[in-house]
Image (tube, rainbow, N blue to C red):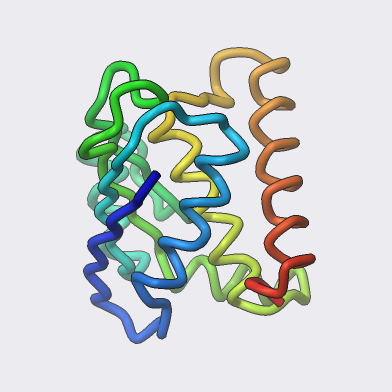
Length: 151
């Protein structure tokens, strides 16, 4: 299984395609993805741009931390171009400060969240789905921390 992360870093977050690819591989393994190859487009931006996108595509006129735009109907089986993830570095920094955690940990958590959405998971459909998705995020993040990828 391979992942190709295409990073558009409009902000100077310092996160690399290699770093995001390693996280992607952990998420795919955890989700038991059946595809051989996947491509993910990632945009790291600011609150102003993510607010515009959130308003345009979700009719929610506020900045958010992460947005996902899936491309595949059956992503766990099909692979290929999974979609786009947009992360606000401004919001990630605020949330990291509020929770007194390193930015890399918060950013990783947001990326995992976005990638799970691209794989078809959704926390807005039911409380059970929300619990499943957030439990998965936490477990994947703990594994990344344990393996030293995320501090």
